Image 1 (cartoon, rainbow, N blue to C red):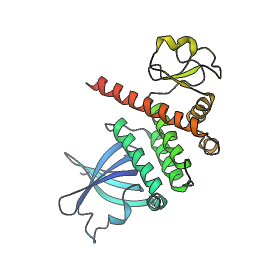
Image 2: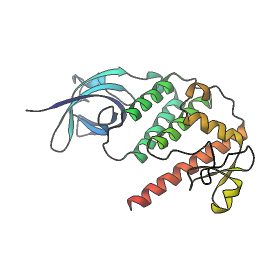
Image 3: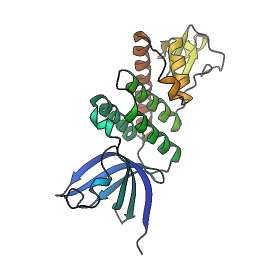
Image 4: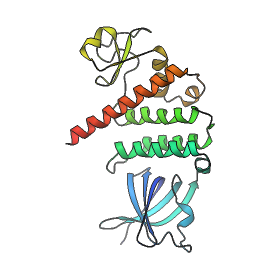
Length: 246
């Protein structure tokens, strides 16, 4: 007897195959990241057509075959239409998807991550498109998904010696995975000097307080520095993961 599985899913990629079929990449509440085969869904008569698409939150039902999961029923819960209507939001949604592909490789249930991702798309759908608010949401997602996956950054004390941090002479260390003090700088020559604004931003992000984060004002110099620190740490983690796999 065929077993049917039902779960909520956030759709983040789709690929057309054959004449009328499609494969959806989704992140689910019960199975983590999976690929779903949707037979004949591109036909105008398909009953599945209106319930699933890129950036939808849908309730899906599927059967597990020998080599693939096949979609059997689907109902759209939230279509996040505003993401489609705004180019900046659409770009940010795609950037979030790239992070998922970079960091999550196999199927593994993570309900907390699913809820977090669902909330991210809901916030992106509703947030003001005025820069840099929606872009800040991207970084909010980036730092927190790294934390979910075991790369939580130490931002309350020195990541190396555990001493109290002071507003001046503080640095972000990719190697140590957090902020270090001046006394520990000589042990890590690749660290980047930061300021108290960066510490404040990271503390709010990692406390998962989007409401507070969305209201703070960030100067242009601090914003540029924050982007650099975020980008450098992200690529450091990616290279570390790649070397571990090799």
